[in-house]
Amino acid sequence: MRRALLATAVLLALTIGSPLEAEAQTRASITVSPAQPHFGDTLTFAVDAGTSQPYVTAFCWQGGKLWFYETHPYFAPYLPNSEAFVLPASLMPGTAASCTARVYKVAKNGVRLLAETTFTIQP
Image (cartoon, rainbow, N blue to C red; front, side, top):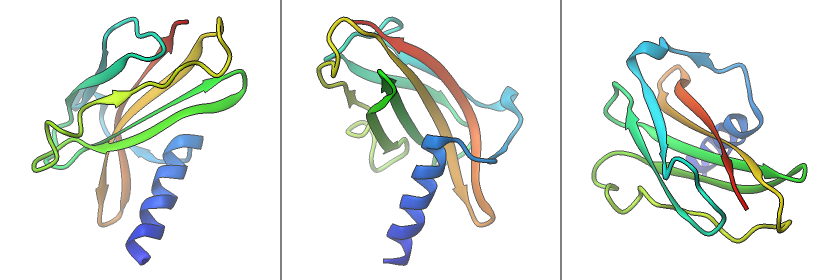
């Protein structure tokens, strides 16, 4: 129960933005594929985290509402099954969604943001 509450708090903080301690960005990177995603696509992320157990969180806003939110472990034994982020249909047809993907690790002293990228989901 305690672990579930901690995980929920961490994921919420990553979504709404918190004073996470960012590590040197030169060691980590994250890129989205496809480069120009559309509603209904399946996203994957190329992650170079410089750590053995990174997590990826992707969240998107459309029309001022949180439209999409998922977190996946990006390490064995979860890979390759945890790589796919399947986007649902649009909440507001014809309107793009603004998204952020973050790669982070959970350490004894808290959550460490390693890298992030922003992208747009096209109608």
